[in-house]
Amino acid sequence: MEKQVTRWQKIRSGNRLLVWGPEGQFAISAGCQSFKTVKDLYLALKGNRGSAKMALSVDTDLKGQFYVFCEIAFYFGLLKQCKVVVEELADVSSSGKAPEKWGLLVRRGLKHGMDIYSMSQRIQEVDKTVFGNSS
Image (cartoon, rainbow, N blue to C red; front, side, top):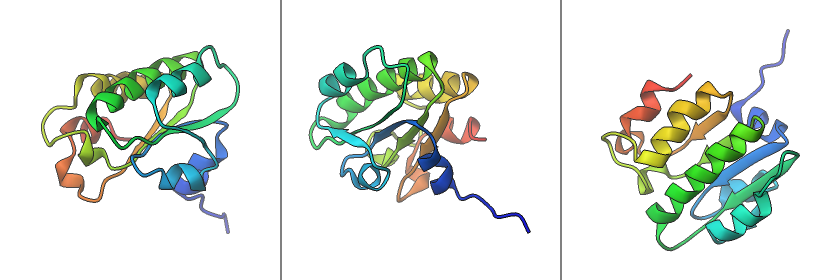
């Protein structure tokens, strides 16, 4: 009998992982290096084509920093395939169309081979773009 691999195992198995999580719980359990500002995350990732497990855990200006995180994640994934995890998506999105940078990441990132995992306590509060592009 073949052993089934869980999503959690798939996420942790990669060597290129970016995590957005306001409280940082997922990042800790995934073994990520954690940053408090998008600037610090950007500097750590700049030009990185190798292994990286990094997370952004912020507690102020969630939406503003999330949009920059999405842009960083998109270009990081274009350099070489990666996995992106977004915790508490409802904090930075709404039930309409995805915010610009998040929408770009979801639509075009998937096309470029990125694995994107979005999580929320109340999934009905997140944007419709996630559902239209899920695989």
